[in-house]
Length: 80
Image 1: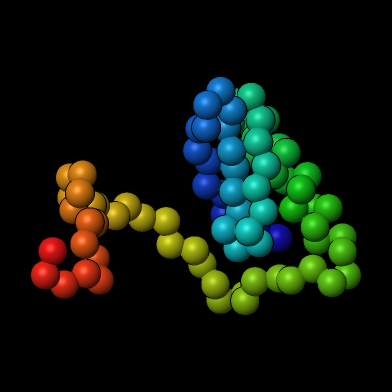
Image 2 (image 1 turned 30 degrees about the vertical axis):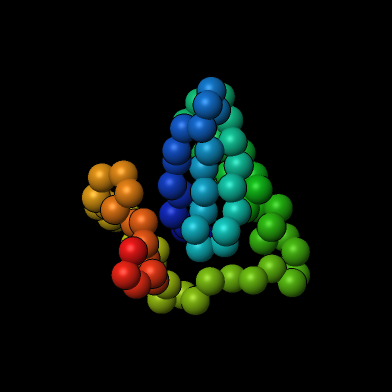
């Protein structure tokens, strides 16, 4: 099976996330984080109650732009 992985750096560790299964792992390097994620996914899939994603599901990883600080302030508020 093939799953996607999103890798970010948090502090001194790399965090690898599989969005289809909502499973994450970490490591000292990108390779370590991905290796740990593979292991975590394998262990998850061994569970007979494991929730598998819809076969047609493909996560979309993209960017979202947000204005400068304070631009989200006042959402839902009127007259401020």
